[in-house]
Image 1 (cartoon, rainbow, N blue to C red):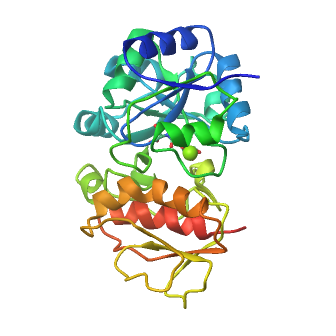
Image 2: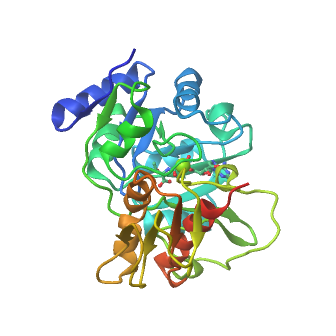
Length: 311
Ligand code: TXA
Ligand code: MG
């Protein structure tokens, strides 16, 4: 039986690097959500990530760079990709680009593209720089579950499955990175996140509609609490909880307010922790307010719709 510890400070960073060097897993904070990291160039280490998360092998991993120079060793960056990297890295933007040969098939799920990002989180950066190689890191939750935005969330997802959670406090953005497929005809947003459509549109046309490429892990029901979630308004029952944006919440057994100041950034930061608390409150149903679909509201609504999808 593996004992899982939450640990912070320089010794935690040294331990994290040691685990990565030995082909083991470590949970690390990023500015979006906590990730479950491993040596991205070691297929056996990557296999352990799929195992610990119960993640199907068709769902590829994001590769996190120790520095900008590593981007060209892993992927082929077009001029638009270079411009996006210059503008938003380090930060919450993941680029899907043609891969190079050194990337293990397990990481890309056999696709000819690889998803890369360079995290801005100081603790993640310290570990990555000291390790000196790219780190593959999906969100540190079991497959299909709510992403962790605090070390205790990781513990409740992966207790007994990993040795170390490096404590970096609560995550800044609270929703996962924006994922963009960079193609010749423009930018396809595969997952909405902290970098908004408007910010991206300055770099090329945003293309939507049919594409063979999608982010496989973002299909269907995802980010899901175990308790059923529906959008309101709904007449509240005695065992109903509310994930509130702007409604009053009278009559609900449990209310989690996304943002006291009705601010979308704050709402994103609180979203997953609030969903987790509602899920642990022993309710029959979670009713969610819709939030305005502008800026970060697009990313929040994308998560809520997936949480509501049951198939
Ligand atoms: O903010 C984030 O992106 C966090 C932190 C830890 O970096 N990571 C994260 O990873 O959310 P994950 O694995 O939970 O979600 C990554 C998504 C998955 O839906 C996966 O299918 C998609 O990225 N993805 C990975 N490689 C891809 C590729 N080559 N083409 C299309 N989608 C890809
Ligand atoms: Mg995930």
